[in-house]
Image (cartoon, rainbow, N blue to C red; front, side):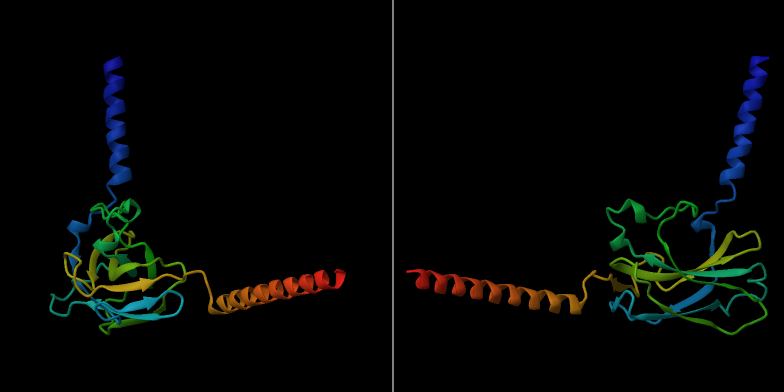
Length: 206
């Protein structure tokens, strides 16, 4: 009886594991069918909260017709390049897509219409919370079950080409720096005036 219970429990655990993790696809199984471009030039430095990125995406026209018949949604994301992932576990690349931390910043998500053969375009103002790092852009195609089925990106397979940088907001503003300088000058001037008055008082008392 006990052995049967163990067997049933084992089968149940296997079933649950398949339910929980079976839906999580792997990046290595995705087909690269999307052509993705981004406006930043190689090595260009952009500023968070200020600059814009124009991205385009569409299915590779050299592929057979019907390649994109299962695509329902396309999500475009800003992704960390390997140089900005080194020694940063919270940005680590994992083949299992549910655990992958390469592409954490959403640019846009749009429904996909296979009958529309025009190139999609979107202009994105870099969000203020994007950290300083080196990036590329990737697009995922999702099916009706919200599972990734294809992708495209602006860099090569090793993620070494067409990379660009983004500088985060420093937290300081030019007006604050000006105010700080003015306050410092005022403080020094007040100090000199104080010593001058004290010195005058000393002479008068004598």
